[in-house]
Amino acid sequence: MQSVDGCGGTFSAYPGDAPRSIKSVDPVQCDKPPQWEVQQATLSLIGEMGMTGTVVVLNQYQWRALASAKLVEPFYAAILWGVSPMKESEDATLAGQGPRSLAGQ
Image 1 (cartoon, rainbow, N blue to C red):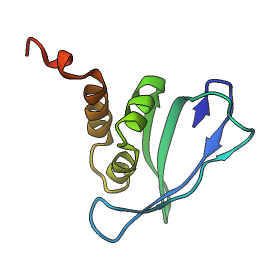
Image 2 (image 1 turned 120 degrees about the vertical axis):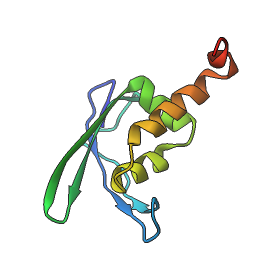
Image 3 (image 1 turned 90 degrees about the vertical axis):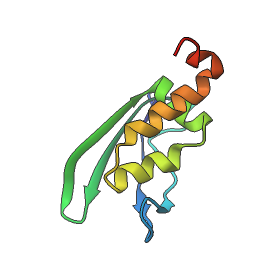
Image 4 (image 1 turned 135 degrees about the horizontal axis):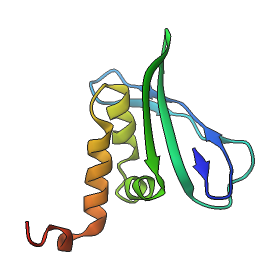
C-alpha cells in the first residue's frame, strides 16, 4: 500500500476453511503514520513455497471504490482463492457510480 503522502504499508490476509472465505487480515504496518488515503495498492500472493507470481495493482480510485462498497475482504478472498479479483473492483466501481451509469445500456 502506498498513500498519497508517500507512506508505505504492508499486511497479510489469510484464507479461511470455507471456499472464498477469509480467516483474518492483519493490521497494516506503515513505515510512518499516513496522513492521506491510499494512492496505490499493489498486492501479491505469497504461499508456503514463496511468491506465486500473482500481482494485482489498484489505483486510488479503484481502492476507494472497493473501500466505499465494503468489498475489500471479498477482493482479498478472490486473490487468495484464485478467482478474478478485478471483478470485485469493477463491481465496486459500478456501485459507486449509481444508476446513472447504467443509462443507455
